[in-house]
Length: 326
Ligand code: SF4
Image (cartoon, rainbow, N blue to C red; front, side, top):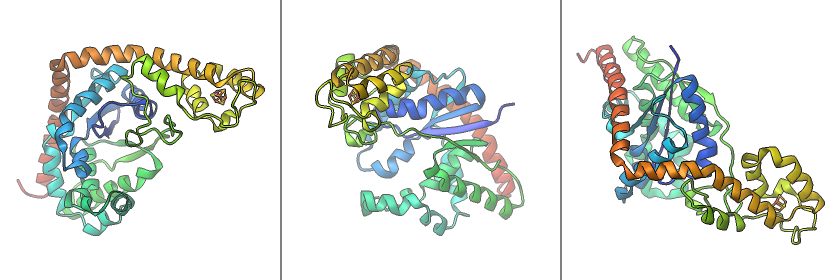
């Protein structure tokens, strides 16, 4: 039996190339190798977006259709919405009793995000979200969690909480989840900064070819390459960074022709936007079809919730037995 992997993402609305190259391609590989559980973490979205959560249901439908249209296959993985599995909240309440506040306060993201987003997110829910994240993982008894370097402290916290539970109640209930260190590429957005919805610099999976062309056209290149014949420096050019993903076989030629002045930025950008549009065409078509049939999406997440709830109920039964609550 393959080991179980758990990964989740907040419902951010339409997904962009950064998600596609970072998260989705990773999930597609994981679903082939592991018993994969993929979750849309809508409660996590509330920790920072509690003031106006009205967009969350629509955002869930958008990300779900992007996942499936891009190749996350509900036939090969368990795909569900976090809040459809209330056992996660029950486990969080039980484990909150043994989780020291100081462990949560020490999480590097806690102080950092409060500084960045302001004191108004200094809530009980935000402080406790690493515990909620722990329960996402252990309620389905996942063995593996794909994480970037920066998320390692959260996984270490999950392991600490698991050990504390086993030590307190003298019973092994959960596997200690292990990190699968994953390289999440730093995909540049149209302004050269990391591609992110909050910077407004994304190329979305749902974008039409004309929109993609417009966005690529305004991308930052080498400022010293003004005319086609000027020698360029691909290593500092955001367009070139994307060519590596979308026109990989042509990269040595693009590199050489940019430097020699044989290739100009207009032609280079055209080549890139056409390739991105071609790659996204089947995804755009499939996502539109899925969004037109919300009953299919509802059915997929209902089946995912049923399967994960089955595992989660057994976990809770084991937890309550260990705690002698039943
Ligand atoms: S030719 Fe291409 S790689 Fe070179 S600077 Fe222009 S856009 Fe960038």
